[in-house]
Each structure stands twice: as C-alpha cells, then as structure tokens.
Length: 315
Image (cartoon, rainbow, N blue to C red; front, side, top):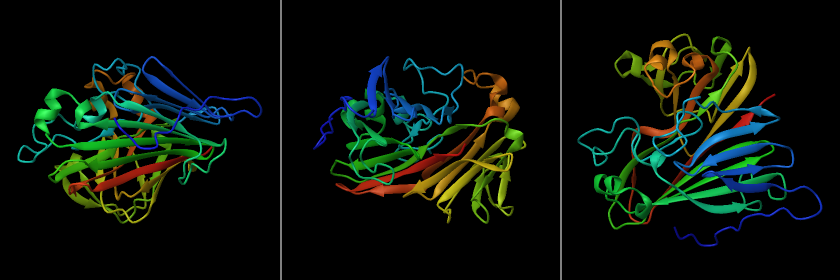
C-alpha cells in the first residue's frame, strides 16, 4: 500500500534508552523505556495487549484464534465498514457481521517517534505504529460484496500517558460509499460486580436486550448486573470512565466520534461462544467501544474520515 513519507522503523541507538519495535509471529510489538508496551496482530490490525505500569489493560479470550482463521475474541478488533449484521437492503448487505477489516491481513507501514498528535509529543516517550489496508488487499469475497476503492490507515500510538488508536478512512474511488466503524475494545477489569461506568448520563441508547428500543440513561452511573448490549448515541461528553471499587481505572476519550457501545455477554451468552474462555471471563472484562454506528457515514470521492480514541490507565 503506497503512503507518502512512510516513516522508517526505529532502531535503538547508543545512549539513553529509546522506544523499541520488533515483529514476531505476525505481530508488531513496541515498548517504551518505562516498560509500557503494545502488541498488534497484523491479522485484523488487532491490538492484543496494552500494558502500562506493569499492568495489562486489555482482555483477550484464552480460546482466541491468533492464526488468522477467524477474528480475535478480545483486544481491540476493528469494525468496518458495517457494525453488526449489515442490513440486507444496504450496500454492505452481502458482508459478514462487523465487515471485513477485523479478518483481513493488514500491512505494517512502519513506526515513528516524532510525528505530531495528542499523545505523540516526540522524543522517547511515545511511539506510533501505522498499519494499512486497501481495496487491493482484501479477499475476493469482500471485493465482490463491497466493490469500493478505499484506503485505511490505522495508527496506534503508545505513550507514557496512554494509548491512542485512530482510523483514517479515505474514498479512493469515483463513487461515494457509506460505512460504519467501531473500535470493539475489551478492557480487562478485576471484578465486574465492582465496576461502574461514568460519562453516559442523560444519553439516549439503543438497547439490544429490549428489542433495540431507544432508552435514556437516567442514572449518571452504569452498572453491569446482567447481559448488556447498548449503543449510546450522540454522546455530549468526550470521556467515558471505567471505575473499579469507585476508583478510576480507565478513561476512554472519543476523538471525532460520538457513539459508544457498552457490552458484556454475562453468563449464558458467554457459554454460547466457542471462543470465549474461560466461561466466567465475563467477570474480568467490559467492552466500551467508540465508533460511528448510529446510521451511516458517507464519503464522497477523495474525502477522508478520521476517528478513534485515547485510553488512559490509572493505577
């Protein structure tokens, strides 16, 4: 995939410790001198691990497939160009659930520690990894089902104060297309019964557990006491916070996006998913997923859309 000014890979030199990057077994692994690290699987450009202060912040199923045979259960799978089962009467109607980005092989475009960004302040305290996917790289089935010329660049920036993931979508063709996108993030927590989520108060949401009816979040705090599958739309606050025992654990800041999905499969749903292990793993995870999934985004030829998140972990 062509990209102007493609950043070159960083190789640690002598002197002060610098960020390091290496690839192994289809993964790109980056580390900071602080010990913070991130791992991205080239299949799906799925973030598999994000460690800060020695603590893992993402949940990945013990039965997750990392061999490219199916999308990864856990981490941060990328949803594009359709969220959920696509409607049959839409241009995405022939695609599988959640589209093709999470089960396509992406190209690693390189790394940089000097590009601008809210977390990438330059120097040795951050490192940015870029991954690309274009129409030419997806499967023949996906091309036939969704015959649009597009370019995706997914940037994963690891910094000492958080992790930023941004998806840039460009229409490279001569006709417009519509899409949805979502970062389906599985966060690792200690005990779901002690978790609360702030930042969604007074927001409308589509409740998949109540026949996709629209509800309003009247309580400023969301607590998980059973299966939850909600699409919060047009959120006014930029930050959604996950608390453990009433103390801040993780902040999720939306960038260029106004929707978020909150999901936990709970007992029965977890039992029914062959790649969800252990079966009581729902106690150790909560999915807070930023995206543009309420309706459709439209890109005219040559236009670009960009959206993503900044995640910050608390001790």
